[in-house]
Length: 134
Ligand code: IDP
Ligand code: MG
Image (cartoon, rainbow, N blue to C red):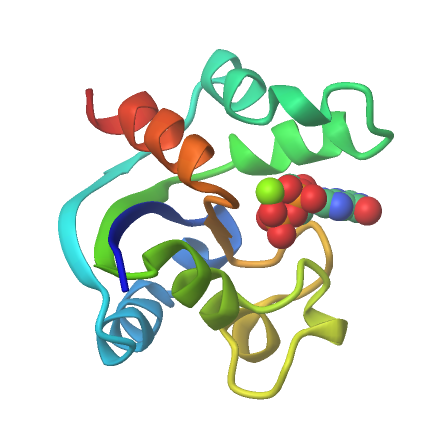
């Protein structure tokens, strides 16, 4: 197994509902170690840059509006196969399709307000950790 780092974000819908603690508990229970963490409100420029691969999607403007609507918590997580371990812990993008016990199934409200973000590849994990913690 290879030790990796991944970027996690607790999104505004979860921060607003006092779910930072429960989500961090699930992360720690999955043997992922928090290496760096901070709370901030994304600017429109930051949100647009972070989600630039989705700029041509119909949900993009709604996504940017939502992601800048309140504070987020960003965390750099480390562990064996951290990228997959954390993607599995999050569950599917749509909370209705996410497996029992996953963060999105437990806490997500809908496909936009799905409580958490996680890097989807080693390459993007490096870019995203750099984005917030350089
Ligand atoms: P992911 O977060 O599971 O990696 P992505 O496809 O990368 O999913 O989408 C980024 C974010 O954009 C999602 O987490 C969600 O907040 C939002 N999103 C994705 N697909 C849709 C959609 O079909 N409608 C509305 N919002 C969406
Ligand atoms: Mg994604």
